[in-house]
Length: 324
Image 1 (cartoon, rainbow, N blue to C red):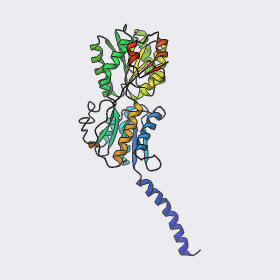
Image 2 (tube, rainbow, N blue to C red):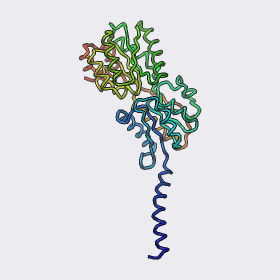
Image 3 (cartoon, rainbow, N blue to C red):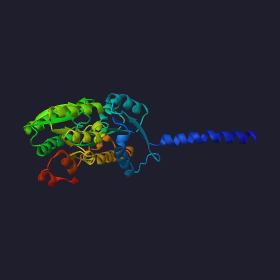
């Protein structure tokens, strides 16, 4: 082998990795930011990827996703968001209550959120014209709150006191939920007792307190941490004979009594579709925040039987699904 042939061979060997790196760099990168942990978020992440796939983006083929998980510790979100911004990702998918941290970290990188009250949280100007670099899909939680209290009052009419469980680690969201549920409880002539839990141990303590106070009706706030604790919450409600209502159908299928709200997986799928649109050139300011058009009422008769409750026919007639 001549010296020239040797140099050409070595040059080709070093050029190949450079070509691979250049190809990888050419792929768009989404930063996936969540307050939760990977395992409890598996179904939501799958729905997000499905939305991306519908737009022609497949992770590992023509798209890279950088994941940042806070593991339930909301105080970690600002640093995780800043890390994604430093890596110059093309879009940030701010899920699981992380939208505020993402917005505080950047005013230029597009952000697609999933959340309850983006206007009230100061993320956007209006739903129809979000403005700036933020858009996404809302759960319409404020509009759902009166319905939760109404349904719970029908299920447990003897309970003059209704409890509310919120996560203090997301203080703005918790305070908003408390205000909304308080207004709904006042309208129904019910007293409201507030409980706070941001860890598994605090959840256990909250249910012990409910049992000691003999409070038999409970609203579970729609916090991402509670979503990851569906089995535990349903089991504790059954153990302490507490009628609880949840936002997501996944709670009812896990053994909870009743749920009312939009499809959480559908919301994440729509967020994936929006992220794909932005990767193709759409501007967040031009994409109206999507709102759910359908709400699911799911009743678990097995849970009702275990609690000694008879579900009123008026609720059964409205149910989208009855689990027996």
